Amino acid sequence: MIKTIFTDCDGVLLDWKSHFLRWVEEKKGKELTGDTSQYDITTHIKNVTRREVKKLTHEFDDSTWMVALPSYSDAVKYVKKLYNEGWTFIVITSLSDDPYSKEVRRINLNRVFGEGVFSQLICLPHGADKDDILKTFKHSPSFWIEDKPENAEVGASLGFDSILIKRQYNKNQAKTIDKSVYVADGWKEIYTYITSK
Image (tube, rainbow, N blue to C red; front, side, top):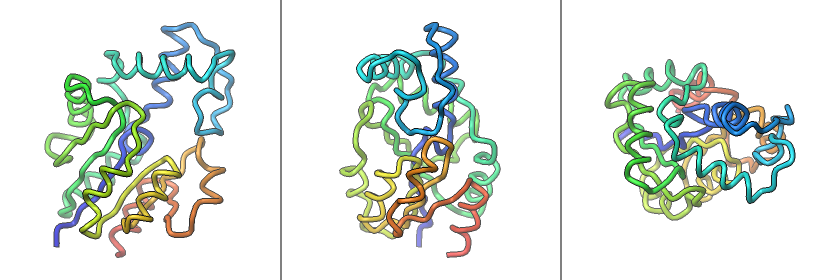
């Protein structure tokens, strides 16, 4: 049996949100609210509309800052452990379907995690739902790791062993997520969960 782990990228492997908020503050002169308890980025920046935030995220995702996103603290250690134990990783991200953006993402992942750790990188249009792409992989039992509760629930409904990685901005939603989704505090817990199966 092929041991496959499907994973989101931003908020799971790479710390997109902190890097984005730093860019917004330093390069765009925006003031932050200091409230990072919500998934919705609009709540993190003072005096912005949802439309303005969407424009800012598009601009950021097409910027050179995207080549230097940092990993979450324990992601590299446990992703590499799983990879060295024979697990195959496929990344599905709603970053952009622009081929240059995809290449920047590949460079960033390879720089942080090492060449060859991720066997496939699937880039969907900015903000796109992942339902359809997940449906194409649902024939084989595998894990799906997300930070967005709705996407974690979609994965579970399609038969994936779905894992929500808990972050500051989704911890309230994690309390009410469907019981079919396993909630993990970080990659160490994910590693233990996957290897115990």
